Length: 171
Image 1 (cartoon, rainbow, N blue to C red):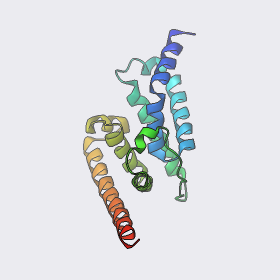
Image 2 (cartoon, rainbow, N blue to C red):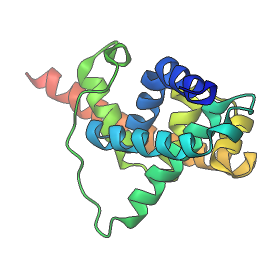
Image 3 (cartoon, rainbow, N blue to C red):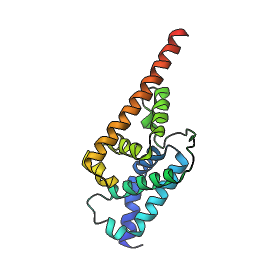
Image 4 (tube, one colour):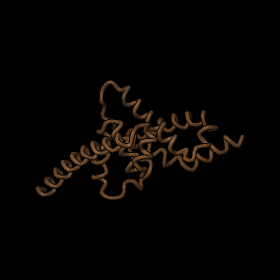
């Protein structure tokens, strides 16, 4: 095994869980997330000699994941409802499981680009600049997409939470 292959294997071993989480949040389906990650790692491996020289190869792989998720969503002619699966890391489910389900449903309802911004900014905790670099857009685009996405999420969560509170009060 060459040093390059060894380095790539070590990178995958160290970052696979985190990258799988990004893929899951980008598409909302555990099986599709595994496919996205596999695709991203395959593309990364082919260019690993160049990618390994980056200060942050995670950013490159995240960008490949997000771009692949956006491309897959674009190819779908009809909006389909994605069945809910368990996320790759159960630690994400801290708190109220019903609220988590509502949040994941609202996240899946966002357009792919807005979902990517939310995932990178708030789940991966990237800065606006880092998110813009991953998505290949301007910081202003990240800000506007995040603002629109957060408004949609607030609207969806507020409505769902309100309906749940009314139902609980009448029970």
